[in-house]
Structures are given as structure tokens and as C-alpha cells.
Length: 322
Image (cartoon, rainbow, N blue to C red; front, top):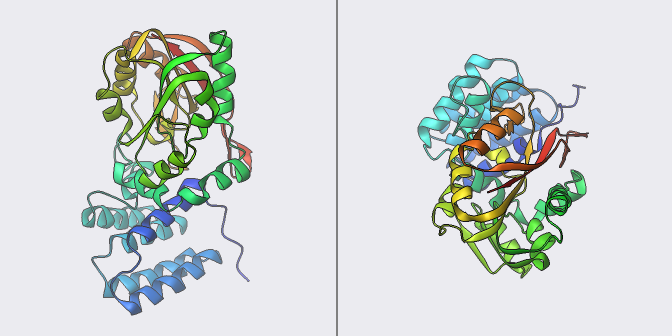
């Protein structure tokens, strides 16, 4: 019997969910069956055999972007980086919105720029189908504690921890909203996934929810209109944070606070795209973006916010003040 396949990072699992929920069929029944057999081989730890079956499926359905994406992942798992890149490029050429996430895989392999590798369509698709199960997986399986970390950090900066108008960017299903709703005069949120927003709305803690990308959402807010901005486990989908920090500083009132968690990396670069296709940021990068936006660091601690493959993921908790 072949060895079991290695654990797949959380985001990689979501990539398959996003791809297959957006394009459930290649349009050819035989190709679909071969693809299903291929996934069985992948689950048994035989990516090379699975790749052969996907190649056969693509002979019948050469325009299937998700099939090419899957072929890229299988070739990568089998150790053939060159052919993996070729397959990812086919996927991206067939779907420029890149729902499947081929651009992020190319960036991870060093074959494309890291910044902007995750398209809005990809991030939205990651979570649209996953929304009903999201909290159970994130909190139950991955021990997620981002909102609690933000609350503890803000309590050290402001006593009492009470706020006026708050903005929750990348609010997801509303975990941060639940934590902060009673501490704010009003809280509003944005997210790319409509399904996640629907889950957040059910909690009835937000004054307003809107489907929008984080920088665009902030750009639409008036100057000095918020007392608090929250971003819990959001920056793993964003590389360069310069534009977001500038908009946050503009929207915050004088003395307002910007609290966020981030995945941490200790290299000299301001950010990297990791093996798990999540962005990690450095202390130096955060400091430079904050200084350029005219914000001061009021709190910084290195703490994990979630597990990844059974171990705490290196993280940090930051509170900036305008």
C-alpha cells in the first residue's frame, strides 16, 4: 500500500473547494470521471499516477482551467516544478480572474511576483462554499483566537477598552464583531465573500456589512470617521500593506487605533508568500508601513493566532495609533 499523502495546509484544501465549487464539471462526463479517479490516487499518496489521469481528462477538455490547476498541484507534489509551472500558467491563461489560485502557486514557486498573487476572485471563492463550516474548522480544528488576542492587546493600550465607530475589515463570519460589538458605539464590516457576510449578518452585531476588498472599502470612508479598525487574520491574503495603512490612517480619528494580527516571518523582506500560500510579514515591514502612514506602534507582541498542520503558526499582534 502507498504511504498516505502528506498533510495539506488549510488554504490548499480551500483552494480545491473553491475551484471545484466554481467549476464543478469540465463539460465532459468521461473527463470528469478520470478526474475523480485521479483525486482518489492523490488521496492514496500517488500524485504522479493522479497527474497521468488528469492529463487524460485534459485531452478531452483542454479548456478546463480547474483541471490545469489540479494538474499543476499534482506535478508539484510529484516534484516536477517545471511542469507544475506550465500547468499553472495554462490555468491562469484560461481564467484571468484566477478563481483557482494558480497565480499564488506560481508566486510560491518563484515564477511570478508575490505581491498581488491572490486575486479577489480567488479569495472570495475560497470562502463562499466554506462559510457554513468555517468557524467549526477554524476555531474547533485550528484553535483560532485572533479576536481574543486583539481584545487583550487593545485593553493594554486603552482603558477602559471602549470605542466609538469601528470598522472590521475582512470580517468573515463575524468572530471579531461578536467580540467587540458591546465595546463599540457601532461596528461595520467588509469581506470579499458574500457567503461569509451572510453568516456575519445572522449574528446581528454589525450596523452595516458590505462586500468589498479592504483597501477599496477604506477608500470609500470619510476622513477621521472611525475610532477603531480591526483586521483579524486578514493580512495573510495581502502582500504589500502600504496602501491599506495609508487609508487606515486617513479614516481614523486622531488618537484612533488600528489593531490586527499577522503571520510573522523573520527575514529582511517586508513580506513573503509561504509554503501554505499565505503571506507572512516582518516586524521591519510593519514598522516602515506604519511610519510612512503617520501611525505609531502602541503594542506589539509575537503570539500565535491559529494552528497550521498541528503546530502554532508564528504570528504577531499589533496596535497602531494615528
